Amino acid sequence: MVTSRVENESYLHLDNDFFNEELNKVICSILPQFDKMAKAYLTFNLVFLLLAFVEAVTFIVFFATLAQSSLLAFSLAVIFLTIFSYFILRMYLQAKRPEQFINFRDRYLRGCKNLINYREGIPEHHIALAHACNKLATKLEGREYLYYHPPQILDAVAPSVEKFSCWWFWEDLLQMRELLLNGSIEEHLKLVKCEPTSLDIHAALANAYVILSSLYLDPAKRGRESDDRWVPEDRYTAEMEKKFRETAERAIEEFEILNDYAPNDPWVHMQLAYSYHDLQMPKEEIREYEHIRRLRPDDKEVLFKLGCLYFQQGFNAEGLKIYEELKRSHYAKAEALIAHYGNE
Image (cartoon, rainbow, N blue to C red; front, side):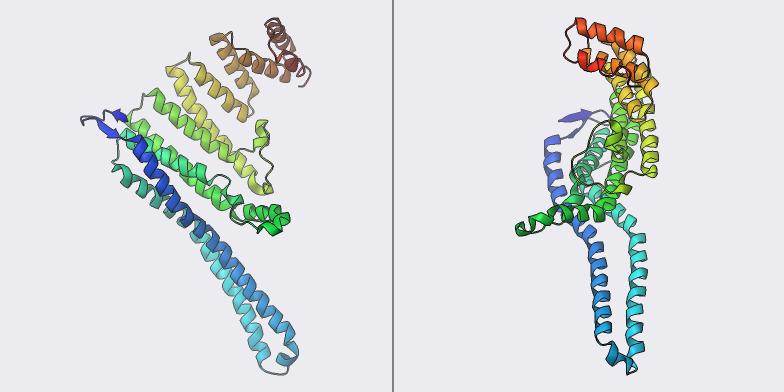
């Protein structure tokens, strides 16, 4: 049970267990609708592809007969009409698609608002909607691989089918998750307006930006490998990199606000260090780990990370000092640290 005072109103209560239980029901009911919407566009393309193929084969098979009659011109006109209709309808559907996704998100949020009798300006309600956005975005993660499965007898082609499913649907899933995570950020911004000096709310907003930035970040650039699933080459483009940097910088701004209010909170500096690492800003990352070291001098993991950064940036003397300190304390990763020596 969560309670909060809002201006002159009495305490308002939100039963989190009930909300989560009902939210799961809403998600289970709305996911098939999203799948149907996503698959409809593929069905449209396949129908026209099949129609054009049948028309072309028929034209080739009966060409000799058609050539001796006035039906030749009519047959060609039908083929060109099919192709022309396809491209016109395709352009229309592509232009309409973003609006469909927005309407889907808004319909989902209306269902969530009905669960809590949503009212603008009530912190608990904004938190609940932000949670709902994040939860559906999480449910959609990796869903682009799951739309089509071959029968067990054709298991050999399963990887190819999975690859095709991802290739066709990844942009739809990315766009939908992006809309949901931006919706979560919008709710957190409303929260900030309700309680502008709350550290918890600024931390939640910063975390919302971090979650959105992870949508654009290539896992390989963070020094970790993603799973073995195939990823389209255009999944992580310069545009994605730009979106990532813009979102990560907003997260840093929020963490800087937290730092102003709580300069001696190690968690804040750790989040700043992670953000600077993702943005490939090693000097700023070192600065944050040095601050954490002063706050938690006995934290060997922080020392290890700081030592790695020193070696990577060519500050070998500082790195060796940390290596000696870790070695004296019999830290298990001490020898792993010295392996970074000279890896500038």
